Amino acid sequence: LNLADWEPTLDDPIIVAYIRERVGEEGLPVAQLIKEKQPVQGVDILEIMSDQKASAVRKILYKLEDARVAEYMKDTDKTGWETFVWRLTLNEVKYQINKERHKMLKDFEHLLELEKENSFYQCENGHERVIFEDGLALEFRCPECGQPLNFVENEDRVGELENVIEKLKSLVF
Ligand SMILES: [Zn+2]
Image (cartoon, rainbow, N blue to C red):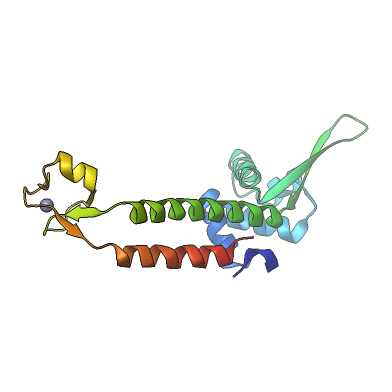
């Protein structure tokens, strides 16, 4: 799924996973409620969800805002009474997810660079792989089991990383 053409909705598994991770399971019904009633006042949300503590619902609302799932506009009426009007901002989430994928892409590209620029050594027991310089410092003995560290191919790893990078590149905009 390329994010550029994606119009996120609350039914989307990516959005659901994002809300679960950033806000928690309890964020889902609140987001659903905002979707159904938007633009909806904070007091109305608290009223509808009055089976829960107001402080708990407020906390969820601000977590949703923090995760860019929803936003509020503050309004003050003639009597000086402040109201908060909530809306979903799932397009913002799209940009957040895109940003995260770009960061992942960068991390993988960095890993690929490390794999390409180094040769690796490992014991026959499959303990931690080390680069040449570290192997030298260890006199090519595994610090965990004392077995010799041998040169190991990393073509497979390079190939896997290249695949992941290619896939991620097709997913970002
Ligand atoms: Zn070992």
